[in-house]
Image (cartoon, rainbow, N blue to C red; front, side):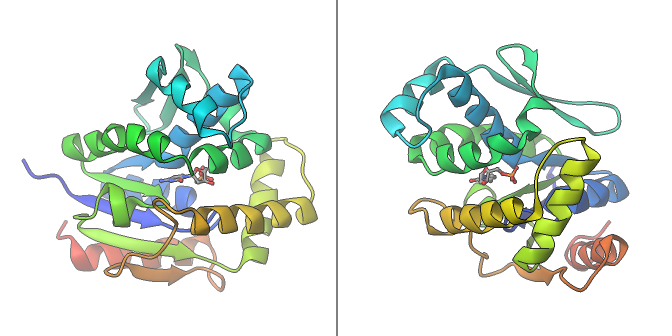
Length: 225
Ligand code: DC
C-alpha cells in the first residue's frame, strides 16, 4: 500500500507542531515531529557534557545512541532516550539552542535520515521540521512552508512556555528565535529553505483556526481523502 505524506517546514515558532498535530488528527494521519528527534540528540549531548558545536565530540555519541519513538492512542509522540521517557525534558528552553547546534552537524543529520523516512514508509504522515520537503521526503505529496513574522512567533512561543509553567521573557525568546533562524537558514547542510514545489502559508494575520483551515485546504487540494 502506498502511503501519503505531507511535509511541513518552517522557522521556529511558526506554529508547525500545533497545526501539524491538529491537521493529522483531522485527517487520521500520523504526526511526526522531527524537531523532537534533534532535541533528544541535544539532550544526550548536554547530559554527556560535550560541546554541541564540536562535531568531533558529538559524533562519537551517535554510535551508542538509544532513541525510541512511540505513539499513543491519541497520536501523541513520545521520545525515549536510553529507555527514559524524555518527552517533557526535551521541551525545556535551553534544549532549543543546543538542538539547533547539533542539527548543523552533517553526521547527525545523516544518522537521523532513515529514522525519519521509516515513518513515512509505514504510515500516512504529516511530518514537520526544517528539511522535510527538501531532503527527508522530497517526494512528499504535499509540501507546505509555514511561516510568520518573528515578533509573532516569539509571542506564541512565550505563551506556550508559560502554559507549560516554564520561564522566559519576550525579549529573550525573540532574540533566541532570530538567532536560531539564522543558524537553521545558514548552515551548509540541509538549511531551512522553502522547497520549490512547496506552498507558502504565512500565518502572521491568521488565528489558529484560520491557519488550520488554510492548511487543510492546501492538503485537500493535493490529496484525495
Ligand atoms: O522544531 P524544533 O524547534 O523542535 O526543532 C529544534 C531544532 O532542531 C531546530 O532549531 C533545528 C533542528 N531541526 C532540524 O534541523 N531539522 C528538522 N527536520 C527539525 C529540527
